[in-house]
Structure formats: structure tokens, C-alpha cells
Image (cartoon, rainbow, N blue to C red; front, side, top):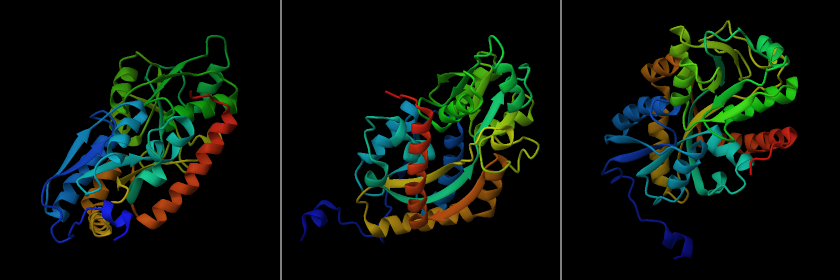
Length: 312
């Protein structure tokens, strides 16, 4: 028996899962990742005939929770709801990242994607990104914007505005999009970057104003809101949500989890719920998902280099 084989637990796919599965959300409760995880966990639990328990482990733009899963036993009982920030952006923005995403995890599947939304308190004078840029160029225009952490996709979206428009928006990091949106609504901050899952209902309720979306195309849930690219900021990247297991998780378990994730992401009821939050339900098999992550890791590294931002 090889040394590698000796390190892998002997697990029968027929016996798995025989106890509850932990699904780690690396952000605070109430944010987009948390909401999506609970929708998917319920359906995966049905497919696996076992309870899937969501556990929030927030901090450091999601990297604390991701690192916890990377260090967990590769037995299929501790999984991660990873996002583009923890899996493809963090290698470019965290010089001492405690894990290597493409080495320390096995991708199970992508389950949803959508563009970030730049939102404002309804009292803020700008109604779109172009108006914000115009205001930011005037004296006193160094407005503060929040994101769900240093080096997150939301942070980089704000940096992209600064670089493209030659303005100086000031970044304020939060531990999750939920607490951030509460502060934007309360007037603590005028602006925030959010995933659509967290922001959409608040926008529709009139508690927030959407200024622009960062994806390659307009959100079907907010068709009147222009993209960053339409507003003169050349950013065309969506955020995504996916399922991951620790590296060396036995192949039969990974296959079973991929099948359960496919059933969950393809379920019409789940897709409808995901759409309600401004995301697109999209099951992507792990091979294609892994290739996508490799490509996006290079894209984000190039973007960070181009901005000249030091994240040390």
C-alpha cells in the first residue's frame, strides 16, 4: 500500500453519510452565502437522507472558515460553501493565506452565480455609478464604501472604480454583507458592495438604492440597473458560490456529494428561490468548475497587480 493510500480513510460510499454533515459558511449569519447555503443544505439533506447543518465561521473575508475546512478530516462530514473571494481572489490579496485553494480542496460543484451590487443609502444624491463618479471627483468626494472584508470581491470592485475613474472612495471592511447592509440602511456608511442575495429584497423594499452591478450582464432581477462596464468601469466578473471538501476526500464520497449538489442546484424549487435573491442557479460539474477556478485565479491576480494595491 502506498503512503498516500494509507493516509486516506477507508470509507464506503454505501455507509456514507451515517451522521450529520457540517456545511461551513465562512461569513456571518444573514448574508448572501448564509442564505444560499441554507437553501441548498435543505435539498442536499433530502438527497443524502441525512441532516446537513449550516455552521457560520466568519472573519478575514471568509478565509478563517475556509481554512478550518481545509484542515478538517477528509471524510465528507465537513464541507465548505466557498465563494470566488475565498477560492480565487484570496490568493492574490492575502500574502500569507493559510491554505492553497487548488491544492487543499476538492471542488464538488458550482451552484450559483451573480454580479455584486453597488448600493447606496436612499438619501445619497447619486442614482447610478456615473453620478457617483461625478460626485467623487468634487471636493469632499472621498466617500466611504463597505465590503465584506479586506481583499474581497467587493473591496476589489471599489478599487476598480477608483482606478478607472481616478477617484478616492475609502474602503471599510465588515465581517459579512448582512451587518454591512444594516449600516448602509442606518446611514453609518453611504455606500456598500453586496452580493445580490443579501441586497435584493432591501432594494425592492426601498431601503437601499442599486447604483450598478459588477457582472458581465445586467441582473435579471434588476434589469434597470446598469453594469459597471456600461458606467465606464471595465469590470465584468461575477461572484459565484460552490461546494468544496478537504483534499484527499475519498472519490466515492466526492461523487455522491456532487450528485446531491446537482440534484439541489437543478431542483426547480431551489432555482426559483435562488432567483428570488437575484442569483442564477447553475450547477457546474467539478472538472469544469476546477478549470474555471484556475482561469479566474490568474484573472484576479492580474487585476490586483494592475491596481497596485498592497494588501499586506
